[in-house]
Length: 147
Image (cartoon, rainbow, N blue to C red; front, top):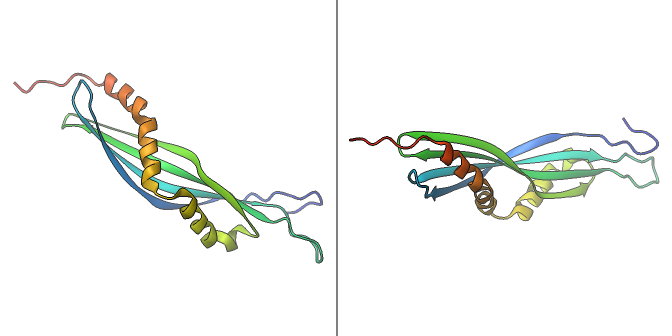
């Protein structure tokens, strides 16, 4: 799969690990809404470069990028519930020399070190989702009174 000009072998394999949870309560004129955010860290690996003949340096590198897949479930009391899924791309990225398959454990450590607290990323995702959540709440029918 290599060429004289340095082929790029795409091994777009992805690994996923649980990323945690974050909860918020949003005050809205229609009533308080409880939103649960759950995240999964997904790491994509791309194999770049070529193996060089003896005596020449190899150009093999494994480029990786971590994305946070977020699932939001929101409820307004007993009368309304809705959900949304979205992705925060490139929350961490990097590369390592060599084959992706032999660097998986080291890349997992790199991802953990660069991302730090996943809860912080989920809190940022919740903040980015707030205008969307408010727009969804504005479209809900008014609450029925139980009288």
